Image (tube, rainbow, N blue to C red; front, side):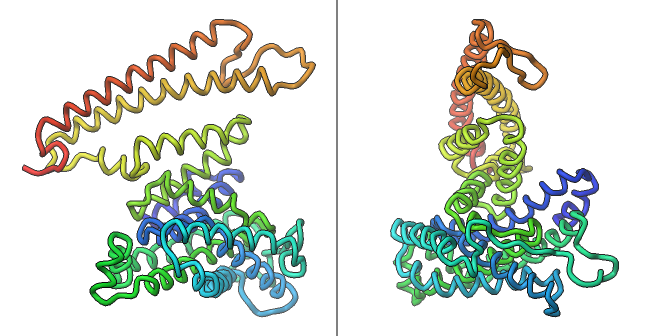
Length: 405
């Protein structure tokens, strides 16, 4: 089913901008899954995961330029170059970062991310300076009519690598190393007591995670045909962390959902409103505070099972929650957009109305503000009533929560 979705997605969304969006989603899905090997499965909070993807992208771009000059390397294998580069840098940096765990590990990864970002501006011979490095993915003669010039061909290349890497990362969760990694995450002392080296387990996992991140970096280099210091910056690492948390770190498919939602909000919302970062931040706060399991955890709780007689009741609660959330969202969006229009509008402009979807609103009138307050009040009241109802349902019987007879 996963392969079918990857194959048919460009048939449903066949516009040029839509296929480009699908390509970005594919690379971020791979980044999110590789990051979840550290955070979700190993409990290692990293603030510099983009380092491995970015350095893999730089190495891939250099090899791509060599291929342009005659090196016999097919473009379809360029992501593997990025994976090997990411793995080698994982061996180097991981030896330092995995010596500690917890908050110390997170701070060391942040320091390495800043170090690599500064190096990107200090060594223009490798990183290309502020302008970065450009390349051409159309190299040599087309193979079976595939030149990777059209964006749809790049998408299927990304989809093929994504499918293979997803299977490999899922298989890792079933290996002894993946199992003991969960044990190290849950109780390091007990894992060491039975004879396992917790640091070595974390080190090997980081190397594997860096390998898959490097593949994602190589795909990014092919997709955009340019790599810059932004690819190794902390903003990109923060985006990977954000999307993975939104999807849900407790589930293997959580980063897939998070990457799709995150990329869609980042790319699509930015074309509609200047406040897209505010909405993304608020969405992240709501997910972390109200749904710690992310969107994947919410879906798993909402899906009715045959053993759970209260499943459809939970579905009703989800529908009510969606309606309540829509009321809250409408009130917040209306208020934020009016504030942005009043304070960040064009100085000296004679325009007194703003366009919000299909409506034309005058923020200087009292009616839009009253409407926004009413929507907010309705959403808050509905959320309060829904929480009371869920509390009553969960206290009725154990079967409601656990699905046990």
